[in-house]
Image (tube, rainbow, N blue to C red; front, side):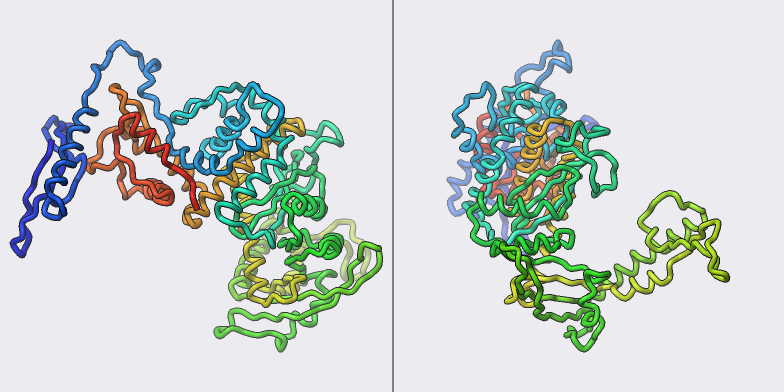
Length: 582
């Protein structure tokens, strides 16, 4: 029904608030009214006659939707499909997937499949974000997404993994092409790093197996698989490559660089990486191919020896106003081995800087290690290796006589502590780009944290590991699925200007659920348990952070906040208009 409420203001102006309301009984059985839609004030309308027509039209439509089919008391709960909540929040992820136009890759193939390669990849890429699980468990949840047609079975999924492996270059190239078209991509320099993922096996099957024991980033003994990832300055992946688990990080860069330049038609690439990729072999390779680098440099030990004199010479530095930051930059000559195997002299820029906040953090970390080292000595815990062992030294001789002792004594290594303290807050970056000033060097290198964050996302939010598939083709296919998911969530974060973490986005999209009403309409739920109307005409309570996050996503796609009830046709029209644009 339509309700007209008169409101008198202090200046004696009277305005008529117009609302469409409905009656209902509260928990105590008392009759109350709730607002379905507030149209505002009649006097504020430019055309009051047209305004009233719109209100009456809405009221009539709402009354039609409220008519219900008599409920059958003979339907058992497990047979009542109307009570099943469906996720419709996935539509925002689907819009991103569809914008990548990966169906073009599959449509170009000459072979014909009995299953939908594009549909399977879309479904698993979306579910890897919303509900990451094994292929088998994910297939069981095939009907949880509202109105998504998924006519495939588990054996189709495993067959598709082989196809994705065969098309891994084409899939990544298509994604790169569409990202360039949609938001642009600066491919002049790229961030590169390596991580690894453990597998659910005890031993590799053979030396050819991708799953090999190596240096695990998570300090596990399980066989691992190495993944190298290139990322652009927007935090969006450019390409990924898989290596055996026993491949050294530094040896993954060269084949990947060659591949990415070939596949993406790049003339010159500037690689941004941490000190783990800074080897003479990699530097030689990069320079000899007319590419560039911005990498961190060790300041301690033999590798940092050539910088020691300048490092502690305070006259070489420039300070900021509050002296919380200082830096020095200079050109140095160094030798490379050219393609003919001869030594050749090159120039590069070196930036050494010190930050007070980094120094304080270094001190806190070291103090924590020392405290644990002292505690371990008191407990005689010698056999178990820990990170703090670096501050414990062994004494193998009697100090007074110099004789070899029968037993080994352990104590805190004060000399190492004092030596490490000298480097607190210092950092060094070297680059082939001699025209870069210190700000540019720090800006470019500073983007490397996003690739480290990306790896955390793959392991926590996407749950890429442990890996259960075993053949090389299935492993590569699995990583392609995960890679597409990663690109999708990064594109969504980019659209949101990185306001929301992946965890918050996933929570928000999983909250967006709906059920079928008995009369065929669709009711949008605030969550799975709260199915009653809200007092406001909108479904959302803006005090809920998850709901606020969901509204951020809705607004990023230029969509209106949905109402609580739609006809099936209206709802599907609403969802059909969700598209990913720049």
